[in-house]
Image (tube, rainbow, N blue to C red; front, top):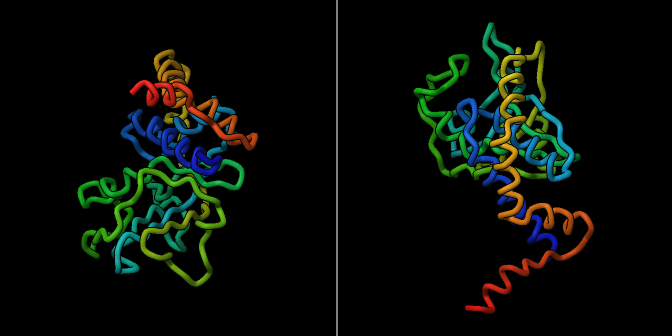
Length: 219
């Protein structure tokens, strides 16, 4: 297995672990906060990013779009409501563990009241993946293009006052410090050998899962 393959698989296992934790309804803020803590304990530097999100899911460039943003594709406050998106920034990578929630959150009964609902439901040509972990340069908006190709996202900036999230931070911090979550993290690290695989990828080595090799040999 090459370093690139190992890194790809490690990312999928990390996303699977993070997405198995349901906190605060599974929205983007909690996905990002939990994901940041999971990655931090693996030695991967992260920071919380806030902006807008546009994902082209079908043929119509206006109707068939997951949009967590306001005018200009930017995240912003609209009255007392905020329309935007949280994700994780790690170096030059955009990491988003909430992608697998988008189809459900864009159903008519869950649409944010600040978003237009007169276009009809999204026609899902492409099912969103469970997560994105991609170079920032591949998801930066192109001037003059409202959306990208089907199945591709834009991560944009924020305009104006930011939403008040102090209460959410306090709730998330209390959960992140709880023994049960720390034990869960440790169990996932061990189950997927994540610390060993991340170290190998960071140092240009090939990770060999000897326990799996022994199991195959025994069979």
